[in-house]
Image (cartoon, rainbow, N blue to C red; front, side, top):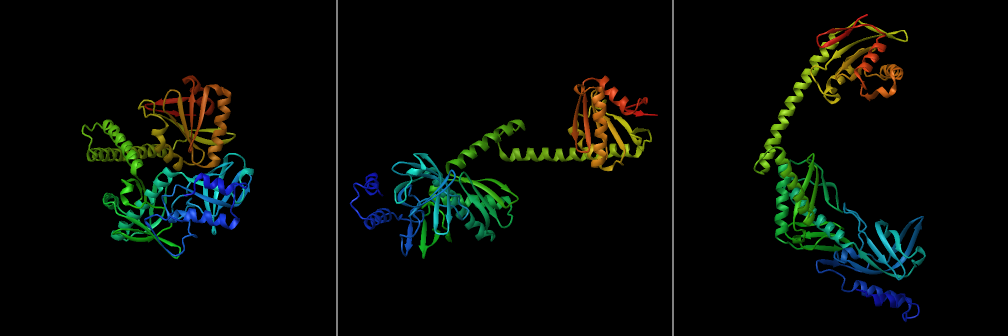
Length: 455
């Protein structure tokens, strides 16, 4: 590893006793010699390989700036070698810093363009003018972030080994890091099978199996003892025991699997267990057993399905009754005859708009044009329902706006709904004024729970 004194020596014009060739040789020897990790096996030339392939655990390194790209506030720096992983193979890129003699550069993104790896980011100390071609800089990887991603990626290899071996299903897509892992399978798998593989992954972790990288002709493979090898250019731990713990967090459609490892998995598990305690209290489950909570939830879901069916049935009965009524009482809007009536539901305390949604939806679909149903749900609330057609809805709302203006806008709150309009009045008297103006002063006759307009 190059020390600070080496950097000062190479960068100092006054103290640099080496020519350009010797300086390049010094940097090459000091960064490549002894850099290859003991879990990496290289067949062929080492100097042309990225440092992250030679040593996943290299947190800091020294390199020379060979190109500078500037575009507005964004700066890109190309080094003659780098330990920053540029992203790829579903693994996210690294972040960190480049430290020069007179500047500090925050690396927020890494991109690989052809043979070049570009470090993108911004100056956090100094100025862009302080970045010079040929300068030796110190690269510092955000190690905690990188190490967690290494664990996530290696855990994915173990999981997919069992998925392919036992189910014949391969990885379609995914993302490893920065906070959690996501696996997308090519085909859906039942949850029980996924959780069985989770258990096997943790067994492999407990065995602390060695993980090796084998590089032949520039092509990298990851080999886990007893699990075979896979082509992969990402970063990995050198022993499965470093993963510590593997936990499936969420599964969607049997194909998309979110997971985490190590301390973060344990923390998420702790939060979920606390939530389970709260759910158990809400469901009045005295003993915190997941099976009891699951059974309780299933019972509630069945009851809700039953209630939903009952609500749909009742909605259908009410809608059919209104439609079959075929009221011929009418009023006129600019000479155009409309037919309408009022359904009074105050007495049955049906609730609010949410509870009436099934009825409103069915009515707005089945009503004929120029037909309006007015449902009174409280002393101050009316819902006007018309056919769900833009022209019809627009026309009735124009009339509503006009009448509300005559009554006084501060006395009525108008809310647009899907195929309906909710009016909330300040007083019952204001509501009566609205109905009177809408129906041009015609009298209303009470008939049990319904009020009907007659001419």
